[in-house]
Image (cartoon, rainbow, N blue to C red; front, side, top):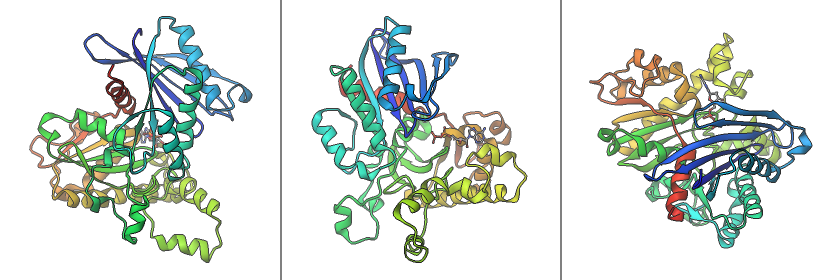
Length: 391
Ligand code: ADP
């Protein structure tokens, strides 16, 4: 821990962190991971060591951790007290939206922060928290070099046609484009694909509480189901996914919803939660025998399957599908349902391997391979931080 990188991932009410040690052979080894959840409401601090054993599990008073700066203070105090030998040489941050300009991670300077401030409105539910964590870190350790790693960056190399909407072109020039998200996850998965697949046409299904698919050809993002915001594409835990824009006009003009009410509906009350009326958690729906739980699961699987067809078309074919994130890594049932609906693409599924959570879950002679690979966005951020800072 004498040469370590702190990775921070700030959400609306949480601050996740990991410490990666730079080993003498150039490898990065995760020594600590944890999070403060419930910032401002019911703060909960949980930390695990490199062997995934819980070493701290504390609930605090609301007033103790009222904001991200307090949470960061607790995290750094804890780290320095518990690991006196810890020497941080850099910090890497997840920043959800990098706008049209950032196609790569960047070292944070005052100019970068000023530029990021101008695009905050592109991701109002994410970027303000990401930037708050950066500012808190700048206050606390002004000399520690920091790097911003963007979820949008991996997709910026897509062809213009993949980034367009059918609006007048000046809207594209004003930044109203398809950006795509979950880029750090996709980039990590692209980096761990088996050699025989890495150069081929792959669809990665990052399906967790946020969910999207990405078409990756020869390691590069070709198209994604998410667009201008993380609202587009698949049905998610509480987000609606793709919606006819006419529905928005109708809700505004005929039903008189305010922009704030619409935001609440689309981000927080739709998706699996809204359709089922039961839960946004796929585990709860899979355990339920209520018809609307089944309806929500059916629609989720249907949307993923349709989008797999669309992304295969964008690449002119398909060689592999990779499942990752909360649902993709942990639910054999959902993987099975989606793979069944995609049989027509040339999938010969291996149900035994799937139930065993194996990395390869298709038969050896399957024309399209199906894989389950755990993602690691934090490691991707640590790698970028090491590279940008030349560590
Ligand atoms: P986030 O987008 O917050 O990073 P995750 O990728 O961690 O989300 O996914 C969290 C979601 O994964 C949970 O809300 C839950 O629906 C789903 N999940 C986790 N474990 C299982 C499981 N065993 N079966 C089905 N779904 C699961």
